[in-house]
Amino acid sequence: MAYDYEYFKKEVYILTKIDLNSYKEKQMKRRIDTLILRHHLTGYDAFVNLLKTDVDVLEEFVNYLTINVSEFYRNPDQWKIFEEKIIPVLKQNFSGNINIWSAACSTGDEPYTLSMILKKYYNNREFSIYATDIDKQVLNQAQSGIYTKKALSGLPKEYIDKYFTNVSEQTYKVDPSLKTPVKFEKHNLLRDPYPKNVSLIVCRNVLIYFTEEAKEEIFNKFYEALAPGGILFLGATEQMMYYKQIGYERMASFFFQKPKR
View (cartoon, rainbow, N blue to C red):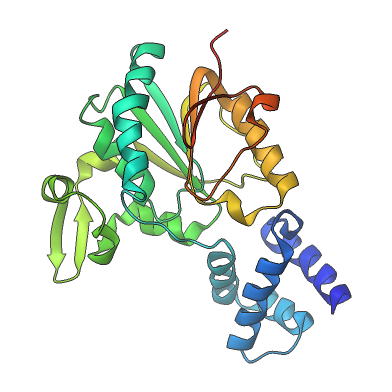
């Protein structure tokens, strides 16, 4: 079975450019085995053959594999720190425009949350949000701007009233003004080039699924991507115990800064 999984990882990389070696093996194998059973197959060979011949199953697999769990205003206490402590630092460090990277943005809840908050302090020409994910399906959903009532359950009412239109009993659509600063694009954190001179990187509740080696590589690449004085915003599930070795300074829980030169 171990040999079969090694073969499976190589074939998945050829098909998707997703390197399963960078994900925690026990978690990934459990998810993949569940999906294989769902398709009434036995073994990784049969599943690879299905992935090679059925585009819909391949897209389903990538969507399932990348663990897309997201919601608006997730972990409200962190967003309050962002608004009260981080935005003033960004304003001080970056006059004029700020560029933000929402990495592994999933269905767009996070970049739109950023857009809502930032619009209280900037106009649309003063900030831009580069929102990326490895999964084309969730990016399509994000670009549509259509969300369920449940997805908005944690969002303060002031934002729902201002930026969402109720299009059916359980469905809402984001206001076009939220979309204006946001550009969605496919990106693989483990293999694609990173943007440069970023004022703020937001990557929350994603890296928990990666191996320690992969996380260290990503944290280093984030550091290189940040402009001097730029800030990395992590999620409640992530820890970066070795941030000092990389060069970061800790600002608050889950917020790390690249020092000014």
